[in-house]
Structures are given as structure tokens and as C-alpha cells.
Length: 221
Image (tube, rainbow, N blue to C red; front, side, top):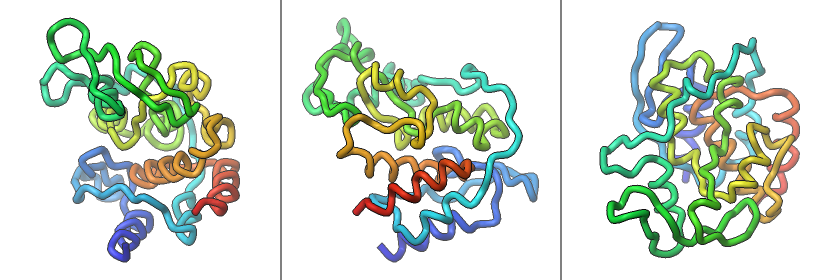
């Protein structure tokens, strides 16, 4: 745990600028180079003492968000299963079934949606949600990323979760102060995931977002 705390602290307080992709790579705007760091393990809990540090930056100017600039879903390993299919397989609690004979498109499984607390069996009822939405990431710094970095973020499995389609549409691109899952028992896990992704990609936050999350996270164990 001490090593994990040190890793998170060094990431938050590093002098680098620009978010990293899923491989830990990013543009360093100060030195004008592109380089990579070691992959980081996902923390199960973010200590309260460093929560404030995650949100030390504010919003800058905004440019127009275009979802097409964030390519998804992709089949990165060419096995005919794109990111959506792989998340459906990962999050299903029982054996999944595919459409037709090829194991490409998922048709059914068993998904316990953490946003609503309900169980779903048809893949058509499930959306793959970006915990930190693409539009939000764009506004909070992602607008400066390359297309490769945007593609990596859009398909980062640590930022993806299988949920009911209606819940995903209700959330849209809203931050926590505007939307939280109706399943209150998932609020703490949701906020921790949100903080982890914001920290991983060095995304900025509004003052409202900071205050709101700081108040809620203090009650999480």
C-alpha cells in the first residue's frame, strides 16, 4: 500500500503536462516530446489526504467537442471483438452467447448494473459507459490530445463499465455534481473510479466539481 500511495502522489505532483493514454504515454508540453511511463495499477481506494491534490487545476478555455475525434469502439487485437464486446464479456456474471456462429457480437449474458442495482440478460439493454465521459474529458484538457491519445482514452477498460442503456443516457456527459447513480450503495465506488481516471489522465476540474466530490468522498470508507 505504501508503494501505491507513493506512486499516486508522484503522479499527481509530477511536473509533466498533458494527459497519458492507456499505455502511460503522453505529450510533455514543456519539453515538446512524447514519452511513456510504466503502467499504473488501479487503486482500490484513494486516501482522503490526497483527494484535494487531484483537483488542484481549474478549467481553461473550451473548443468544440466532436465525438468522431474520439474513435470507439475498436478491435485493437483483431480478434473480431471490439471494446464494447470485450467489456460485455468482462462484466457478465454468467457465460455469454454470441450472435451467429462467430464469437464477435454478444447477444446475451448476465449483467448486474451497478448504476441501477438491476440485472439484465439482453446485450441490447446494455450500454458501455465512460465513467469519465468523453465530452467531459475534452472540456477538462482532452481537447489538446492527439487523435491517438483520444482513441486510447475512449477505449480504456479502466474507464468503461456495462450499465443499463437508460441509465447511461440519463448520465450523458454530466459530472458527479450533476449526476450520480440511483443505486446509492455504488456512490463511493463511482467517485473513486472517477477520481482515479481524472488523476490518471491529469484532467482538470471545476471548483463546483472539486467541492462536491470532496464533501462526499469524506464519508467513504
